[in-house]
Image (cartoon, rainbow, N blue to C red; front, side):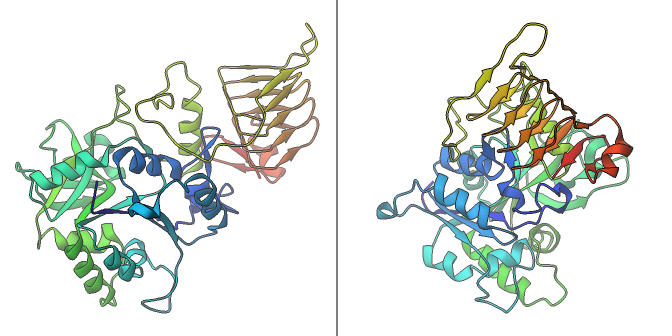
Length: 401
């Protein structure tokens, strides 16, 4: 993947994930026990052979920056490899990042200094497996100026996505943003499906830089790739559609935007299934992170008929202690402690949370470092949970911050 510069957009506030994003950026939110959301896109880069990476940060980025420093300092500057976080430095104007395109524009000098052949724009807050070198090969075969990754979805789901209009030679000729009518443009890759944009863009560098400068001079632009840059470029350049090849290799293509509490909960809880939709145990496509420096998990105090330290159908990270408690279908992150006579069902306990005795948590997310008092019940009565100041989603997921 020589001469390709990867740019990860990681500055979003993630307001729909609040309170999980109250103190950190959305890409730094924990996922799957030991990971952060950004680890999945970064692992795709590493496994694809990308070794030159910029990460555009903005909102509450300290936790994210430290995660990158401690877990991803694996590249060698001696041979031109790097991973750099790029906060707003106001080099091009006096504002913070105003949109996805403006974040890249404000770092245009850094891009030019690397002189890449092409630039890969990625979101840092999706869960999926993808070999970006396959997208690059397609880009070259199609002799495209820009390639947009698309995923096949059922026509009835089109109202939640931006749908690409693609001609038989796989050139994108238009977009329908969340089409409300019943006949969205069908995909040439599968006429029974439609092709939705994944927010993954591969640009020939000169075309990207020219487009960014033009957009920056437009006072009416929102400076967003999807809303402003790409709709104009599809009429000026050859923009090709790349059909997502899912390396997860399951029955359904897996690409998740865990941008809401319900979506985040569902994606985490799926991991405890006997055969989960997303495979974390794939040695051919490993997911890298900053490994937690904790001792092994421990399950203690087993007294028949009174209490038993046990976790069933659960993901349990290092440093967890389940002491005389029962855990079922849950995700326990590093450093979690669950005390005696407590039951945890279908829940997500984030790092260093401690659950007191005689508690019963059901369909609950507990934020990092939270201490749950003895005798607490959550996830059973929406009114009671709201009265305690907890967050409760539409589907009934309780979040304790």
